[in-house]
Image (tube, rainbow, N blue to C red; front, side):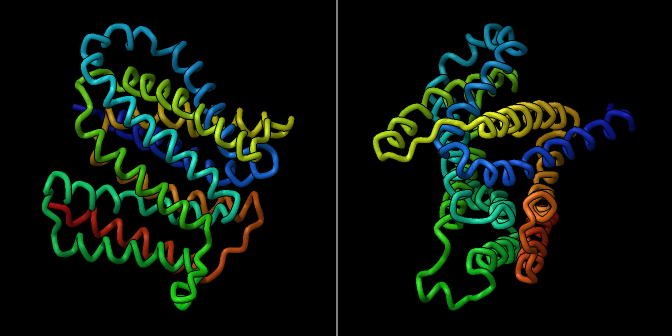
Amino acid sequence: MFTAGSISRAYLLLVITTLCWGGNAVFGRLAVGEISPMVVVMLRWAGAVLLLFMIARHKLYRDWPILKPRVGYLCLMGAIGFTIFNALFYAAAHSTTALNIGIIQGGIPVFVLIGMFFIYRITISGLQFVGVIITLLGVFIVASAGDPTILFHSEINRGDLLMLLACFCYGAYAVGLREKPNASAMAIFLLMAMSALVTSVPFVVVEFVAGGLQWPTPRGWGIIGLITLFPSFIAQLCFIQGVEILGPGRAGVFVNLVPVFASIFAVAFLGEAFQSYHALALCLVLGGIWLSERFKK
């Protein structure tokens, strides 16, 4: 039985998690011109693996007999959810705003819901379906900058499209985690982070061959430090502990705060303009997710 104190602690941990993840949109924009996207991904996971190895290696050693039969599957999950998602995320930051990134990222729970329906035949209620449509409408409003006619002129921002693809990949990763082995969350996270580091290297090679590689500037190293410490390390530790207290269902609802914090940070730290269509889209995304969560089977 959890006490009121432990519940309050879980709430605090999960708010810290979403603050860190919301800040990642700002970090992605700050990295533009300071470090190329694929180098961000590689160095981010290099730093995360180093930190995680110091605190979780014993859990990885202990749970290795459980993890070994599924190591290929977990490495694939790390490649999709950590490497490909982040590669698309930081590439998107070069051609769209942190506001757009944060709001579009709010659509991830919808991709998860759709994936669970098609793969595991999880029943979707009528109001859940309405929530999916409302959320996708909000994402579309952001991608079209509030002008639906853009769709017919094929002028949707490239960065917004990349971010949509990134959300699809993370949704696939989240659905895939349903099949993870019954081992320590920290051990699984360390293994997937190691996979992300290894699988990020080919992306850096391609970036180099294409002539787009940029090693970090002094400011770029500072940004890498922030990305490694907050969204890659602190956020994950807080989320794991929050899930242990509240369970994945209740903890997952807090992810809805990510687009809220991302929007606040984008306006406060980057000076991005918060337009009326951003407000409408944010309301639609959060309202749609609320309907999906509130009336799930």
